[in-house]
View 1 (cartoon, helix red, strand yellow):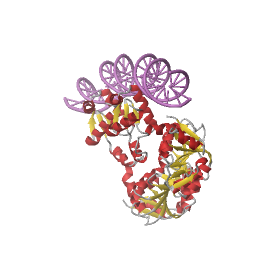
View 2 (cartoon, rainbow over the protein chains, first blue to last red; view 1 turned 30 degrees about the vertical axis):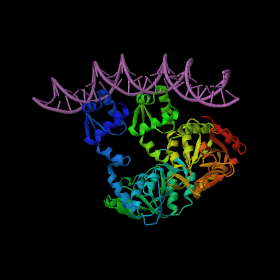
View 3 (cartoon, chains in turn cyan, blue, brown, red; view 1 turned 135 degrees about the vertical axis):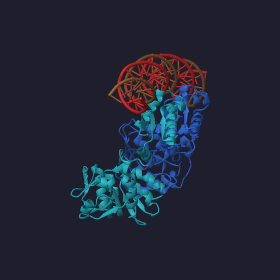
View 4 (spheres, each protein chain N blue to C red; view 1 turned 90 degrees about the horizontal axis):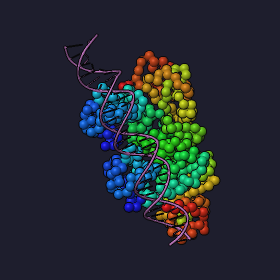
Length: 250
Length: 250
DNA sequence: TCACAATCAATCACAATCTTTCAAAATCAA
DNA sequence: TTGATTTTGAAAGATTGTGATTGATTGTGA
């Protein structure tokens, strides 16, 4: 029995039973205990299961990550609802820009019946957009392998040819004084330009980004409508003195 | 048993069983272990399977691409050799353009040690290029869902910003009088422009495209070096009166 | 808390598999 | 045919996966 086959069998049993003992796996695969231990450790490294004393389980965390790869899906539900809420601002026939983040990615399923035209610099977005049969244009540019985002002068230039009804941007932080920020200056430049090309700009962020500051500044708060998830009334009041805030109740 | 037959048998068994052991293939083909190993390595280069210790599997990724990439593997071996031969014209440090066809897709594994910079309008190409850690730029444009090619004015415009040492184009037909042709006029326009932007243009085609004519004309024969697979001496002589022909012996 | 049992990580020797190399066999061009 | 090229199979040595053993660690029940 090949290593791969064992891996698959183990994962199969796990999804069915939620937890397995090592001895069960030894019986099922007729491999030695050592081998099973090694397999379990390898699979744990791959984030496919959680090791427990005497066996393994699939944790809540992992089950969720299977659907959408997202670093901290503890507040996944919140993110999905936020995406749904953000998508509700899109109207039939709109031409919109979606930036390359995970937040805007989640909006895509909710756009499918709106006959929108989407421009994006996110390679990951493309497959999902095509799946939902949404008319899609991609910007050109250099491919950042980590985020699969298109950036650089080419991106800036291609983007300049479009005008958008709306654009939706993800950020890593929004701060009352400093504004919207993100780790990568090149991606910040793309977001900034997209905002200037749009009749209306929306920044979508969950409440964990409140008062966080990242490396590259995109623009001040008032340049965009802020779509946030529901959190402390007090913070929201402060934000509303700076810009329009739309709160997605959960 | 011919090499091609072995390839087909291996791929057939793989699609049925998901994983195969080397010994199984030795039994099925009555070839030696060495030959099977060589076959598996070749097929892995072509992205047709994933090698694992003791055998091979078809990965999720590859299963997906099967629908996109060529359906019939009848002249698979010819295609491999042609792609390998075409890639041999690429030199260390070249900046090249690869168009969105399957022919150029197959060249990618053979480019990995050449430190090239690649520009492409093929979305399918991107993943494979990234996998081989090749510096990649994507043109912008509209995404044709069937071929996953980027086309249209945006593509033309972004492309215009580059100059290439070489460009490699796939075609659907090459004809002595009419020249190179392809079904889609928009893709033809991209190919035509890429050719004018390159110091040297190569068209890669297997012999089945000889004297075939498709809808949209790209350019006359003499605008590119024609890289073909080996076929009738007579036809090749005729072609050589029109343009430079490189014949990949099989 | 302790003692005992179960489980674990680390290690080693062995077996399976892989890569490299080479020469024989098959194929091809003239 | 002959000579060149390609494909093939076999063998040697390197690498990787496996199973057993050891002592350490963790969990359990009194």
